[in-house]
Length: 402
Image 1 (spheres, rainbow, N blue to C red):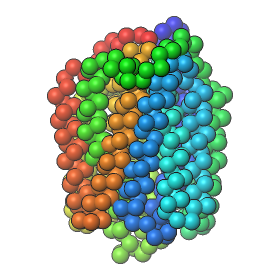
Image 2 (image 1 turned 135 degrees about the vertical axis):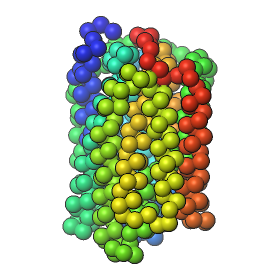
Image 3 (image 1 turned 90 degrees about the horizontal axis):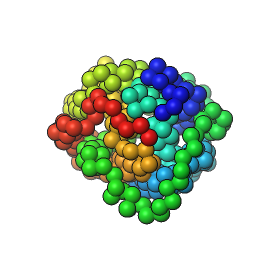
Image 4 (image 1 turned 30 degrees about the horizontal axis):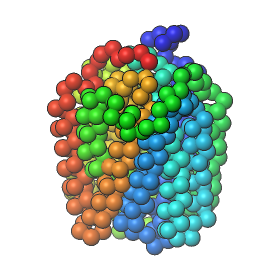
């Protein structure tokens, strides 16, 4: 790739994508940190929250696949990403929601925007740097993304009890608008020849076999990897009897902030390490750490210090998973199928998110929270075993330059 060296991977576009994700996640996580409390005030339950998270993820899944393919087809990715970030910023409309049905509708529309932008952004990032630098590029992006996820809940933590939940949703629109401006102004797209082939499934069939096998393990893990808003809700439930509702809500937001600090801090170092030891071992470790976290929540009930450890494990595992899944996909995908491949992986992850959030929420409400964590831990452990057996994926190698 002309003009990009191993030491020159940190380009204007990489920084622009990173800043975009920082602002976007700041707004998203600010809203996410108070969503369980807002939903509880509207009369929602764990099952309701699981349904909202699951439907939102599922409805965005097919947008991910189509938009990834469409970006390959037309040879343009940037305009799709800009529109996607703009739609995601509309989650501030949660401020006017009067019941959980309206929360579901607004969250779903916002997540469709997120679905549209994700695969094309990842493909654009992979287009921007040398394959040898995928680990650090995606690690840097995850770190920037998660820095926003640290700032967002921290702001929410300070504002809880000072302003209403609805006002926090309105404030979250500001970083959302900044994310759109950063992507539009800073990210440059390299000209590519349009593919012109409208047949989505024909392109899916052309994806490399190794990539398809990799996506199987991603899908198994995804069916257990529930939305972390459920962790916030569980912390609230455990802490409320001792600390009271308001203090428990603030402490849960603080635990989520700790989660995101670890998420941000581990992502880039993990990307650098992956270029030496391979991406697959780190991704397997991420899957198994999630299973360990679920095992910890089976203790009834964990103390505050124990929950701090469990939220920390959650932050470390998601840093490994988020960075390594996307970096491994970059290794396994040829340039002309990159949008389609990232779209397929995101769709599989989205379907898995729907299954996991819905099933965990349902088990939580109908059986017990422990049943939900047991299901999630078992699925993610199986996903880690399957990935471990795929020994030809994610090792340090020279991928084909697009």
